[in-house]
Length: 184
Ligand code: IMP
Ligand code: MG
Image (tube, rainbow, N blue to C red; front, top):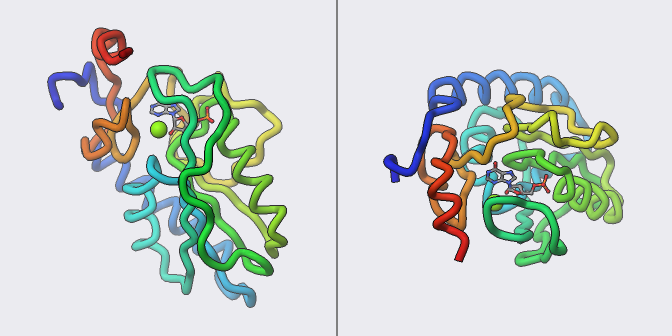
């Protein structure tokens, strides 16, 4: 696995520190909310971020899973967004925090936000660990952003290439030859 990584962009320590700071900000937002909080993680890319983030949040919460799949491969454009697993859990009348790994073209977040709003929540906010600012459309609202990164294909800390590398503890840039070989 390690030999497929070109360079580390964010170390596990850097990520951990930032996730803790994000959790402090998020906790302030929901402190004292009467309606309950429901976290909606977008699977599978958000799993590690989710696990670290929620353990830093001293709030009562429910978790409603949503698994989507878009085109798999080096790039993420094209193809429609398919629902693999639909929301389970309470959203109507509750404060919803969408949690995803990365804001790239914005198609996924836009889709999820629309879908959550249709269920009548009390409020909707979104937290992503990474954003590629060169690509993210300016009209998408994401209240909590971990890091702005360059427009490179990254893996690790939940992010995959062809479903691999999610367990790599840092966030790294894949070697270009791996992306080419992986196109099967
Ligand atoms: P979108 O283009 O913003 O809709 O992003 C779609 C999905 O593509 C994200 O939730 C990620 O799972 C995946 N994705 C986008 N950029 C990367 C990347 O650099 N590495 C790994 N996955 C990515
Ligand atoms: Mg992915």
